[in-house]
Image (cartoon, rainbow, N blue to C red; front, top):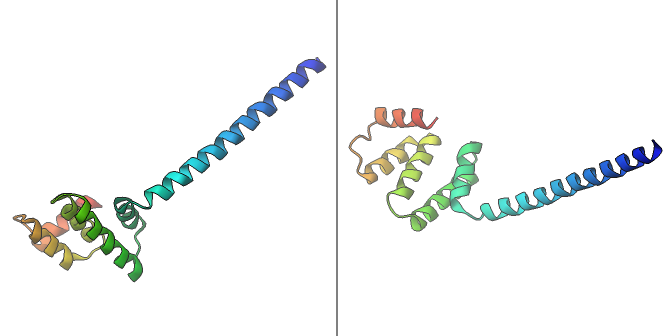
Amino acid sequence: MRRKVKIAALLLSHVGLFFISAAAFAGHRTQAQMAAAEMDASFRVGAALTQWQTDESARVSLDEDLALLSRVHPAPTADVIRLAALLQLDRLDEAHVACVALGWPRCDPAALADMRKVLR
């Protein structure tokens, strides 16, 4: 009986050590992947839109990231992302300009409001 308890304790300790090591490794991998993702303008735009940042520095960095996206992605992909970002951030005047630049037939305030509803 005593031998079985020792074997069970040894087995549990090794299994526990495995899970702790696996969790530490996964945490390290996730941290490295997040650091790499933060270098991507698409990731930063998505993060800015989901975190609802309202300060001016976030607004400026979002504008820079949107400009970078327009150089990386072919038109109209970056322009559509810009329009969605501006609608999400309630920057309707700029969204109207972005919509007109896309050449879409309906860029009136009602159409922009409908687009905002779909985004939310």
